[in-house]
Length: 344
Image (cartoon, rainbow, N blue to C red; front, side, top):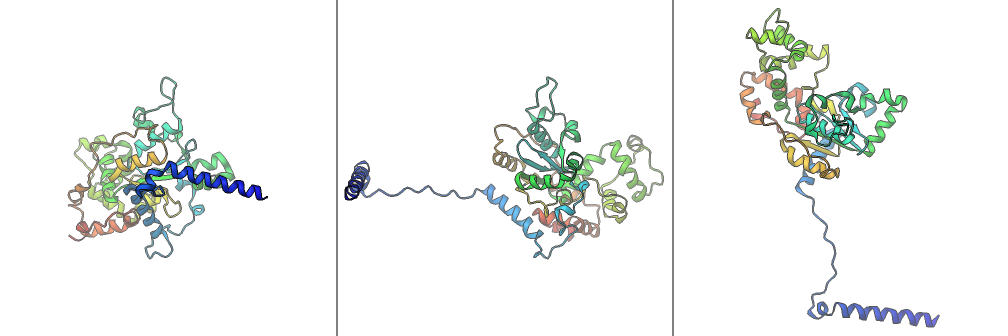
């Protein structure tokens, strides 16, 4: 026992002498110190995400005095038909809530590339999102959406949803609510769009433009010089009769009603206003920055500084009602109240 103790003492002495010899210059100069790896500070992009997620959690909390329809529902109280904007990629463990008029065409293209759910004409999966035709990106058969789970998994659909929500990376992209409305109007009503004219345009002309029998088609209406105005569109949104008949179309439905941020704790909240930075950041988080190239945005994108011009003919009273209608989107996603529009 004594010999073993002497052996370990000798071994320890030799180790110390070896250490001093190796680091003698540092010891002699008094510059030797223990190197500890510094903890990296959060980047401004990480801080941005932390702030956005915290704001949502704070306003969704029961302690918050801000209330809005559906705030206190549980996830299981949301009907499956209202989960029709949650797109799943099982290969990479990703859930994307797509919001129309917020770069969703390009993000759907990315989801198709990741899931390899569409083959190019040569039979190989698409590798570049821009190679996927825009119309195909919206083809529902190419996306695994939560509202399809009942048909796929039956009574196991909700447990499957819960499993994916717990384990997958969940993200969405949002946009200034009023600018999104302008973008939706420009995209669907400024040029002839037969589908949207039949469903919505002719109704708006009849109710708010005092046209008892609107033309049967958008082409005929445009040929006759009949145009739907942004004012008509806003009156349609504010009219209680609109949602009594059917829910808002996805292009102008409130973003929180599409993505349920009080019931789903998103890992990443991107914004169109910071699209390039947010996209690059998200792809790095997903480990896909070298796999997928996100398409460049459109040059014709609706700009936030257009708001004043578009709202010129909207009464202040209607502007305030519209803000009330979309207040949850403004506050949950950190957009400033447009005071200059509401206080003129």
